[in-house]
Length: 261
Ligand SMILES: [Zn+2]
Image: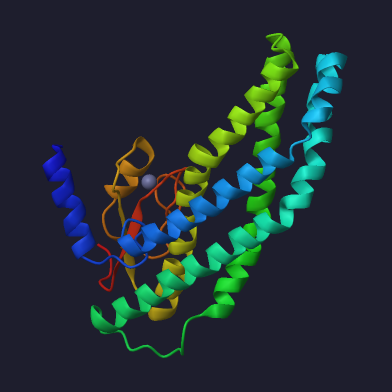
């Protein structure tokens, strides 16, 4: 597809005003605010890392105990900063969930003629979603941080990088986390909150069907996109009932009041 055709396609989707679409300017703002907060969090980890313990780990140089050595150094830092990561992810999940809920409700009122019987934004649902989701997410993020650091340290020892070299490698790893990784988590988690609200509101509003819209087709999502209009509770070929189907997924669901074929 040419760039122009791609832009045309994107614009026509935006014009269709898919509620809970991560690609709209409003939801992109939400994604970027989480990205900035996560970047700050990873930079704080970088500053708080106990570099003074590296010499001990390096000099012991015992490969078998390496991972636990590295974890022993980073664990206290992660648990000190866990509260701030909780707050960042919780607040964002609530905001994104409420944003998509509001978009769904206004889509129902203006485009689909669905009479809205419930009152106000579903704050309780948003809080429940954020609480449940954040707990698993924080655990996953910290595990991945530990895995990355253990790998950098193990490679540093193997490559005889010395303490200054190892210190630079660790700072470089944190710097990658505050850019690439922050962006990936922000996109994936914003999409998860938006999609969850889409599904919850759709059920309440009696939306009958949905279709998977791909913005950057990938092997996983192209198949989902080609399934067309399917029942609301349908599980797509990738095994997901809604985006994200993979890290960095920026697909969205389009609602339909028509029954699927
Ligand atoms: Zn996707």
